[in-house]
Amino acid sequence: MTKGKLWGGRFEHGTDYSVEQFTASEHFDRRLARFDIAGSVAHAHMLSAQGILSEKRRSHS
Image 1: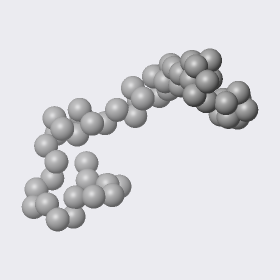
Image 2: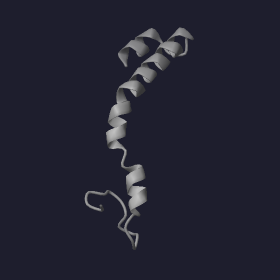
Image 3: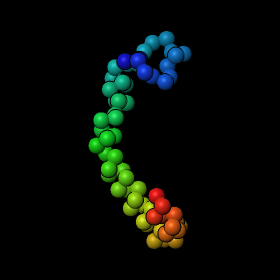
Image 4: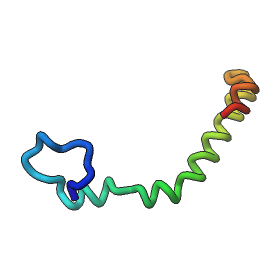
């Protein structure tokens, strides 16, 4: 599974299969993306309500 990797050229052996499986999370990340975005929006609203983030800056994101 070394095809397309951006790193690893200096290592003698390939990455262990179990590590590859553990770190190959793109499919899971896609499932979580909308919840991550919703959390970020809620956080921005809270920061704005506390006067830490301006309304203009909050609505820009």
